[in-house]
Each structure stands twice: as structure tokens, then as C-alpha cells.
Image 1 (tube, rainbow, N blue to C red):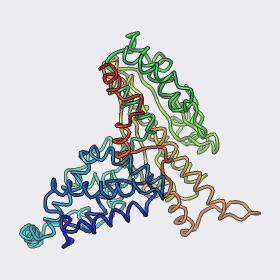
Image 2: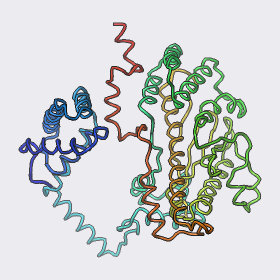
Image 3: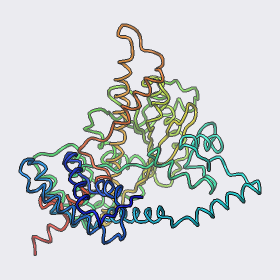
Image 4: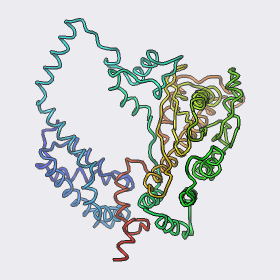
Length: 494
């Protein structure tokens, strides 16, 4: 805990802010990051008052940059940031950061001495009564904890969190496991896609949707993802108007719904091709699956790399009311097969394969479940559900439909990240091989570690926004050039 208070060191805090803005490219300026930098060195005494003081000082520093003509790009960004500073200050993220720091300062000031003593007394009582704590309560890494849970509750080396409910004493470790292995689906979209999705979510009727589509079809320069959004929104509107999107069979749903909002998602993708309707998986074909019941099975949808020929995602489809248990079992086999194929043929390392997710999807009428498998150690797997979505049956739930489309876009980006990591790994591996000889059957530990560092640096393209980019969202929502703002129509008619 710092002994220096924010309110007593205004000049020093402003200098710290100047250093941050000067030493970082203006495209990476982030108020939440700046808050963390400042609060790491200065303590606070009152959340609301210190937030106001912080933004007063921040505004003063931005004004200095806005008046500095020696760096035009930072000058422009500073001027724009000042315009939206009040909105940024009102975001819950800022208050949460200050609140967390305030509580941390209180704890570190000695307010929890009594609680610490109680904990020590409790530990002594446990020891005196020979009550042993579980292994997972000790100082274990997340990886060690997952191995323990797989060995204790898994079946044949597979812990399926969609089927296995862990005892209550292990529930507290699940959030750390989910975060470490990125088990949730990261919402990703460009600012332009987000604008369209927000406008779609605000639609209350078919006429609102038609007005939005009119804007989408008048642009002269349209990227591939906006083409997808136009088609998806238009197709959903047509289906809603037809009132046919209820209790249809698998073939009808495939032709009218899945092909337009799911298959078309990958139509313009430079690295993937799609296989449709009763096709064999590359996993089954290449690994020569011994289980005859699996080897004969076909898949409704496959996303295959046009470069390395391996599968990066698959999907099964079932009509309303039909059991998808068999498809789910098939999906788990294919997930483990994808990982084994990546480990043996492409990456030559189980550790590198452990950085990837094998993803399969299950459609059941208008609902989609997205599952994934990770390799934890050789012959140990973790299975979980990343997320799910539902396509509404009418036009009165556009917000739900918009969120579902965002999930589909994010799924595409997740598959792309898997592909990028594999290709980066393969490129580096090729450098380790002898130019005139065959590829090495396995990599050394040092070579694997070098590739791990490179893969960890693989991230989403700069134009994609994740929730950490909330500040860009706040600013974009205030941008007068945003033609998709829901309230623009109301303003113009006033």
C-alpha cells in the first residue's frame, strides 16, 4: 500500500499521466489502464471524490496534448478524448476499479488483522482434530488442479464438465480454471460490425429492420463480414415474415436457416472451406479410427482448412424434439481426434496442441450449443460448453437475434485464432528441421518453449474489438458520424 495519497500529489499524478500518454502510441491509450497505473502508486480515501479528481487531472493533461501541434496524431486523439471524457467517467468499469482499490487499501492498512487471527485459529483447530484439507486447497497451479480433478472425477482420462457436476468443495476453483483455459467464448467484432448489431438489436418491427437493411445496402464499399450481416439480417427478417420458423424438420432448417446464418459465416474466409451434409471428417479418415461405429459416421457440417487439410470445427443438426445424445458423443470423439491429429501430424508436440481448442457445435432446431475440448496432458482431456444461442421465432426479439449473430462472428474468429496459432507453430518448426533431411519426429523441450512464446503472442487482428476495448465502444457510441446510432432518427425528426 502506498503512503502517498492521490489528493495530495496532483502535480506528480499529472506527470505520471503525461508519461503514460507520451510513452504509448495513441491508438493504445486506455483510461482503465491509466487508472491502474495511477492507483498502483497512490492511495485513495473516497471513491467518488477521487474519481472526480482523477478525471479533472486527466482532462488537464489531455488539454496540454490537444494544444501541442508537434504531434498531430496525438493532438487529434486527445481532442477527441476530451469530447467523450464525461461519458468515460460514468462507465461502471471506472467505478469498479476505484472501489476495488479503496477496499484493497483498507485491507492493507490493517483492518483485517482480526480476520487473519481467526483464520489462523481455524487452521490450528483443523490440525488439532486431524481434519485434512483436500489437495486442491493447497498451493497448486491451475494445471495441477485440473489434472487432479480429471484423475478423480474423469472417465478414461476425460473430464466432461457438461455432464459431471463437481462436489461443492471444488466449485471455488472453477472460475480460475475457466479463466486460465479461456473456456468462455470471447465476444469479438469490429466497430463497424458492432454498430450494425447494436442498430439491429434496437429494431422493434419489420419496418425498423427494413430501414436498417436500406442503410446496409446503400454503401459502396462493403467488407465481407458486413456482407454476411446483411444476408443474415435479411434472411431472418424474411423467415420471421413468413411465420415458418417453428417446429420444422432438419432438412428445412438446414436449407433456410443454417445455410444462411452459419455456413455463410465462412463463405469469404481466406483459410477455410466448408463441407456440407453427410461428409466424412478428416479426423476419421486420417487417424484410421478403430471404432467401427465411429469410423462409419458422417458429419452434417465441417469447417476444413484449405491449407493443411485438417478440420477446425464441425456441427451436427437435429430437429425439434429429437435426441442429440448420439451426436454429442460423436462430437466428443471428433474433438479428441482433432487434437490428436494436430499433435501428431502438424505440431509434433502435445504441449503445443494443448494451447488449442477443438470445437464442435450442436444445432437442435433454433438452438445452438458450442462445445470444446482441450488437451491438458497426454491422454488427459477437459470437455466443456463454451456458450449457446437461440434464434428467436419472431421479429420482436431482435436484441436476442443480434447477440446470437455476435456469438457466431466470435466463433469464426475463435477458429481463425486456432488456425493462426497452428500455422505460426508449423512455420517455426520448419526452421528447426534440416533443410535436406526429413522432418524431425519430435521437437526438443527448448524448441517447444520457443514456439509457445510465439503462439502466446498471437492475438486477434487490430481491427477486432473485445470487451477490454470498452472505451472505444463508449467513444464510438457518441460519434456523430455513426449512421447506425438508434437515436439519430429521433434527433433528425425533432
